[in-house]
Every structure is written in C-alpha cells, then in structure tokens.
Length: 209
Image 1 (cartoon, rainbow, N blue to C red):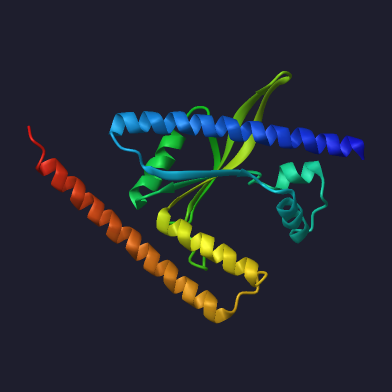
Image 2: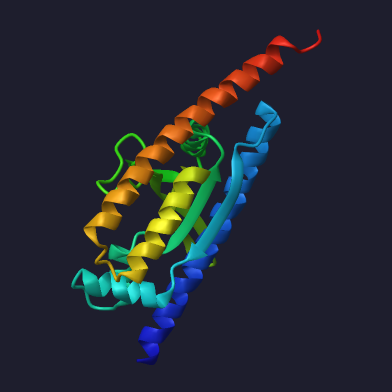
C-alpha cells in the first residue's frame, strides 16, 4: 500500500513539475509575441492539476481500475492549461505560436471551433508533451492546452454547471436552448472579429506619418 502511495506521490510531483514548465514556456512565448506584434492576444490563463476525485470518476466511468499506470495511460488532462483570448483569430495565433515552440511537442489536436461538439461546445484542444528534467533524466509529460474566446469560455462554464446540477442527465429543453446559445455565441465571436478588424484598419489609416 505504501509503495502505491509513493508511486502516486511521485506521479503527482511529475505533473506539478510539468505544469510549472509549461506555464514558464508559455509565458516566455507570449512575452515574445507581444514584443513582436505590439499587443497581447490573451485575456487570461487558467491552470490546474486534476483533482483526485475527478481522476477516480473518469477512470471508473470508463471501467478502469484506479492505478498509477491507468492514470498515466488514460487520463490525458492531468495537467490542464486554458488560454482565454478576446478574439477568434487570436485562438489560431496562439496555436501557431505553440506549434513553433521546440520545447512543446504536439501529439494530438481537436479543433472544436471549426467542428463544434453536438452540444455546441467550441474550443481548440492540444495534447502536448513537455520535457521535465529530473536527477535521473528527462521525462516527457503529457498535458492538455485548451484555447478559446471569452464567449466560448462563458458558455462552457455554464454548460459544466448545468451538467453538474443535473448529474449529466440534462433535460432536452435545456440542451436545445444551450445549443441555440452556442450558435449565438459563435455569431457574436465572428461579429466582434469583424469589428476588431475594422478598428485596426481605422487606426492604421489614421496614423500620423
């Protein structure tokens, strides 16, 4: 039993180290992006290590035993970072930025913006590996990065609360209304993007040479 606890403790330390590494690297990339482009595309960033009760629930729901090996193999979002942007175009700029980083290896991606989930959920997900340096060598640790707009994040947060309240059994009427809201949010994101492009063009046309 003590051996299993020690293994879990070491695994969590590995994930915590990966989170710090990823936060540091993303911070450097964003500073560089801001310097080169004269603006910051990020509204805010959230990060977390998945809670143990969520780990247990995820593995149990999928029929897996609660072991260190199954956590590493089947829980891909133990390390999670969510990047919230103002505008839709910024999401893809952040994706390009991460792709260019040699310290972050992307091994899977899901573009739920171009192809939203049936519920209406929109976001851009990247599963990545980051190198973490320990005394006995380098380990490539998995993490998930979610990139979305403020509007998408608001919808996702509300959807999560509704799903939790109804324990996953959300009434059809509420599901339909949430889907309609997702369509409205998608329309809003595109309208705000057009407005932002117009404002930028206006500034450039009126710059004093």
